[in-house]
Length: 198
Image (tube, rainbow, N blue to C red; front, top):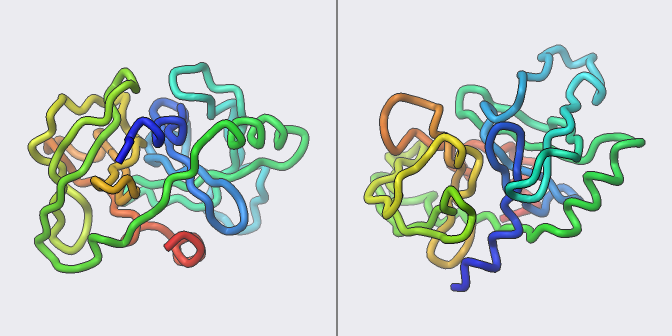
C-alpha cells in the first residue's frame, strides 16, 4: 500500500486533525471531539447555526479557513463527524473537500474480541505513516508498539490498517494512559454513516 496517497485525506481540524470520508451522499470529516472549540448544544430544536464551527478546517498544516457543521458527536468516545455548513460558507468547505482524498472505513476489527492487528499512523510532521499495533477488547482501540511518539497534535488523525482503510481515530487527550482508548469507527460512528461507507 502506498500510504502517501492517503495523506491528502488528513486535514487540520480545530486544535488537531481530522480525515475525510465519503458518506450520506457527501464528503464528511471525522475528528476527535476534543479538537472542537466547544461542544454543540444538545437541544434538538437548535439548527445548523448553533452547531457551526469556524473557521475550523484547512489543508494539513495550514491555518483553518473553512467552516463546518457538527453532524454527530460522541463526547464519551471522543469522536465527531463534521459536514458542509449552509451558505454563504459552503463554498470554502466544498473547495477543501475537492482537494482531499476520501479514506475508506473498514470493519476488519469487528471480530474477534482481543484482537491484534498491524496499523499505521501519520507522523506529527505529516510526511510519514509509521507502524504500530492496534488491540481491542470488544470496544475502543489501544495503540501499542508505535514506531514514533504519539503527540497531542495528532489527535483526530486516522488509525489505518496495512491495506489503507481507516479503523479508528487517534485521541491522545482521552485518558492519561498511553495508547488509548481511541474510538473504533465501526463501534462508535452512527449507523446512518456506516450504512453508506462499509
